[in-house]
Image 1 (cartoon, one colour):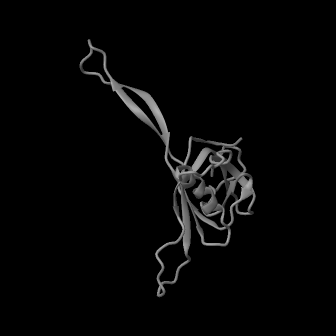
Image 2 (tube, one colour):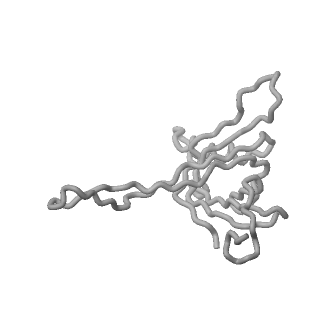
Image 3 (spheres, rainbow, N blue to C red):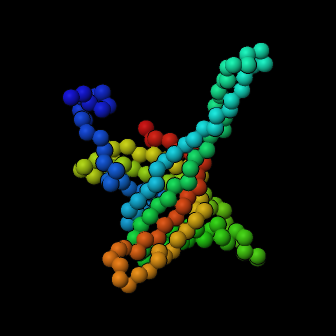
Length: 159
């Protein structure tokens, strides 16, 4: 069986349930779900005036989809504190330092032994949506989840 990477060492792909999220270099506890990293490049269609039957395509602007992080509710206020930085900007008379308004985050994919297999750096992140509590239901059997939606200015795989 050929290897995935071509090195001849690893034959299996990595699982999607072993990962760690770091903000400011600090591991975020309890993150149970991270949405996909997705980049879309707009397609610009054009044609030459003398060639009416051929449409040419060129790359346009690229955009990066927002990322959501979900975790069980804990006493850790990091999600809420980060989200507050956005909403406090609009408050009359409040002065907020923008030094840590945008943050770079790291998403590490781990192997079966829990060692880092690969990682992605996500740049210029800020919280556009924050859910502090889900619907509460006394007859349900589920973990209470909080989540943040993070806008970003791009990502890349770390070497």
